[in-house]
Length: 384
Ligand SMILES: *Cc1c(COP(=O)(O)O)cnc(C)c1O
Image (cartoon, rainbow, N blue to C red; front, side):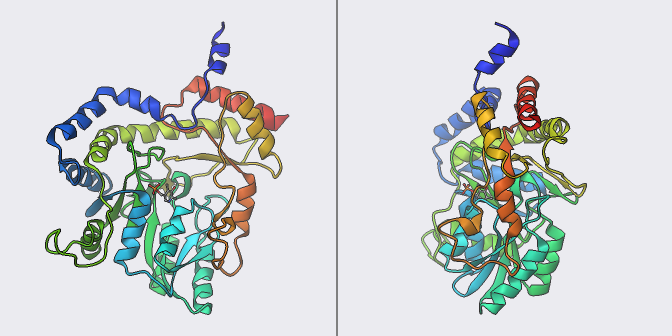
């Protein structure tokens, strides 16, 4: 059997979590064993150590580990007192968890459009969303830009709008921790940043986890209290209504090991993205990263001419190459969100992207031979 035939037999993972597990091997086993030995499963020393490492990794004053990316968003919105009558601007082209906690708190997401090149919140549509909220009698309180697929949003333009309208900015960096915007690591760019450590994210743990990043001392203190049932002077005083929002010690121990190789993995992801761009730029619209940002490539998402996507996905699938579509239904097309207001001008770009995008296998351990096979298969289908 020749090399080519062997490669074709092995199914290709879309995101290879197991490859990293094999690489880290004993280091992870030992880290988990240390927690099993000391038995401080909640808020153990690993959680504090991880928060300190993450703070120095991105240069933020405060990092608060929590139970998921969604809870990270919730904790910040709760700390800001977001509730009924308030509007929070969210992009339509995102994973719906971005807007979920806004609704849970009784506030109204006002859904704005994204830019076709970056897939991220369009500042002009964000500005329209402020006007839309006011017209509906809502108080525009905050905006949640998303750094989709690992690429930072246009944060300076969004900050200018936020300043003009006194909006708070909560960066949903669930897919983009480790990326930079104008030389600054995400986590430092907005008033508050939320990230996720879901296993498939660029920095993932072995369960659910997340973190809040901020330089604001008062916000950090409030989020820390809310994460533990609104604790006051001690955990038996309830100063406010909170949640169970803590990160487990075992997950923090896993993340501490993974963080050591994270910069190397970001570099490896960048090389995979560059090879896709070289191999595919003449047959599809490949993502463009301007020189003000770096991406951590949570997804490698290309755009095709309308009507070509299903055939490509089927052709790749028949060759053992998985693809995914993020997102077939933008926020405003989701049953649970279809009743919320759209920014004046609508969200035509989000609708168009939902028809055109397809994501290819992307992770730090995608080897060259396998990637060449993916590129050849995509080229064969799109050129034919
Ligand atoms: C994954 C994700 C979340 C939610 O993170 P969880 O840890 O799964 O709760 C929120 N926003 C975006 C954009 C995401 O991709």
